[in-house]
Length: 518
Length: 109
Image 1 (cartoon, rainbow over the protein chains, first blue to last red):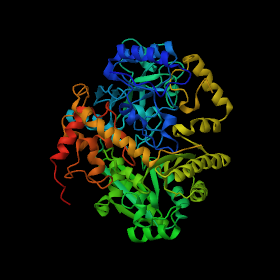
Image 2: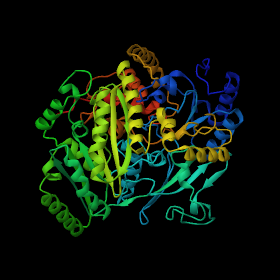
Image 3: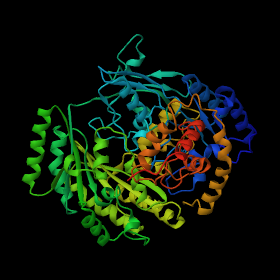
């Protein structure tokens, strides 16, 4: 293979030094697993953020398949000060995809490290490598005949538990808070040592995947949303398949209903009647499964209230649609269904929709699929709302109170509309906390709209911060900005940890705003 | 300050990729250790079909799309389409799914 003159180099690394490192990577991984040609790097350039791809272009991609190879990569990167951005499936869509935090970082692709090391059908645990997808895990469980469920996020089939958990992603079944249901990690540290967290450190122990805490400081958390190590194995808990699964929706007609709804459903979430996150979906989010904006208008700018009302009327979509599900034995579900329906009826508003009543409604079907851990990619229909491939998740967290809802919707809508974009959002109540999930959708092929989207996202972050809201996760173009909003002491402690664990700053500098050079 | 990838940039990249993709498809560097794909139909069912069979992405069965065209879209992920690297769908599996699609018929509604 003849190397092109590298157009892209890691920050602070000269061409000759980079070439030496590439030769060592080839020796370690085999030439076929060191990608430097433009067409090979193309899949890793795909971003949905409103910045030029060149800002996040990798200089090379390394494909590793073993822990020893990951250790070897780390050694070479230390020797030549090469920054390395690790991905598992590379589909962190709306948060940066596979592209590195900044131009020139080498991507370490662990997709082919895809062994399902263990699934225990009695203890309902699994131990997997980073490249394992939810689809692969489901296929394995089916093949073995185990009665276990997985809990995927919306891009289910094309992402995996390790990457999603490490970014503290969430799903839709009762096991939705992925980091809560993670148990035990194997981590390659920047000094090349292999750490097994918690009970994984005890020789001969068989409790690595059943007891999270181990002894001493609990370390797993510092390897999530961070750049302190490369996780090469992760344990997780799987949900036993319930006898009965009963998904349902409740439709509400008025925008202002949302405040009462959160008050109505929060107790059902806290007391476990509805054990999965209760989702309150706004009109355009719900409509995206079946409607494109171009069905109603081709005008640029924000969609008018009149059009949104027409969509509600013509497509029979509520101002808010609540989704939840009941899980358990028939007796269990019957009692809880009675509690839910009586509560809704007593409130005097809301139209209950069961799975049977929903029929083939694509929006209900994909929500039901997500709440039972089925593979579905229907949520990608959001990207058709405006088209053009632009998407950023804006996801502030608040208390699960009705009083938190309308003011957030009004603030977000006002900012989005000002920049010619739409409020496409939902709330998710998980007991005491509430995530407000807004997809900032824009046309990435329209340069002017892309600039508006960037400014819009920056303003959303700034204005919500003024009101005391922080986001739970953000795309790589805004990581430093968000790290600032969590205050200087958190930034400093993260830097202190970085200095101690990765003094050469080779592991994903910039991730979550952690970088010794800035 | 953001700037943009222009339409011309997209088209240029597409042309470059389309020209190269036939060569890529003939290689099978990762065919054996690519992992989990049993056939082109398997790739379609477990990746493509989740969007292209349900109206999220356009119908691609029965359209006689060329392997080069399919490869370019899969590797670049333009617009709403996610991109898939060679580590996710190896070149052999990509060839297989292109073959599968070339023999497919338009789905019945």
